[in-house]
Length: 192
Image (cartoon, rainbow, N blue to C red; front, side, top):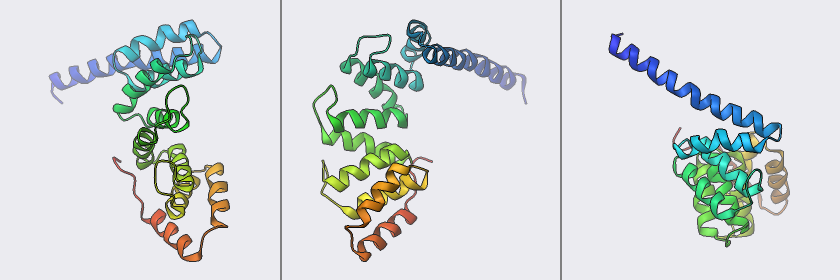
């Protein structure tokens, strides 16, 4: 390894450590209810473009911890993280649009963000997407698709998705169930 590569590696490692440390310090402060310190640690990281900090800062605005509850600010920060590929932020942003929580209900935006996270294998997004297909919210009602998404989430340990799938199965034909199971077996996460 050349000296130049070694120096670059050391600088990258050294510069990454304080960012993670700041996030961890913010998490510790959050867990003890010290939201002022949480904001002090997370806001600079979020402003520097860290998607994890952006997601968590957005969530603080959703729940109103350390900041006034503000869905406009929440969406702004969640969107920044979601656009960088943070599947937790994508799931939370999609969920806000799905429910119309603090902003107008928008099934198109909900589907966009939940599908993006579900396609990466996020089990909560997969469950929400299954609900959209089961209920026909923003998509045509499709029990096969709903079953597939519930099955994928259940395979990752989501008991809720498993219960939804099992309940849905009672209203499906054997052919529909076989098709849903085939789709789940053949499904591959995107971007991994």
